[in-house]
Length: 79
Image (tube, rainbow, N blue to C red; front, side, top):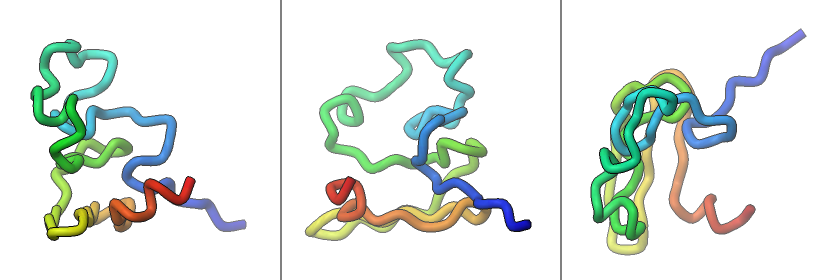
């Protein structure tokens, strides 16, 4: 039996993707204004709270968590 590891931004999220703080402990005003406007890529994994490696490109971004894999901004629009 194989267990599926959820991706960095798959629901349910446990950590804030812009702060790395547990969602239960994160205050609403701790998210930067640029992130609220959708101008910043996620910087932390929503599953484990680790800092992700983020590459910003002219056409989007990609992020990689060492435990939960990679995500490209183009994948978000396919849902």
